[in-house]
Image (cartoon, rainbow, N blue to C red; front, side):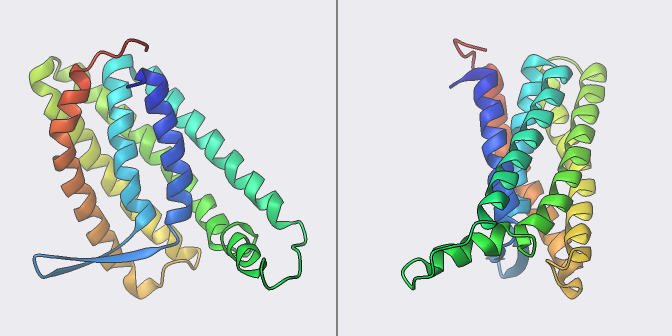
Length: 214
């Protein structure tokens, strides 16, 4: 609806949300198959598709710019929230749940700060890799008929690196127990692959859409 700027805003919001949601582990039962993952990891699937869309419609340089902008604004948001934790809260039972919730996520000892360091480093590497792979495939397989290969090919390859690095990085940071890392990595990769294939028809549709503003 809002062209390139709308896609960049979507990516920025997704990065901010993923940095917080990565602290929440979830489990699914799909066809009697038990799957464990973190919400932040799953949310990144939408970012990959949005960035591929920028790459397809506006080029590799714009896709790289979107990554750097989202990284900058994501870090800025986390820094501002960290500053808020340095202020002393009102000592009142009415406000206690709010102050506790803020410190749990954004203080130096909070999970989100640890996840921030790991998550954004992995985000930068995996997204730049996705942009590179997409551009390489696009150079070899041009035309609308190869759109599926460019989208799924870049995502499937870059998601392997992304999932492995973020899962084991969070384990090193003490956010994910080591005994769950392999199950979470495999489960998260499976979910991302499912989302990537579900998103493919939407990707085709969005490529065909021509917004009034770029």
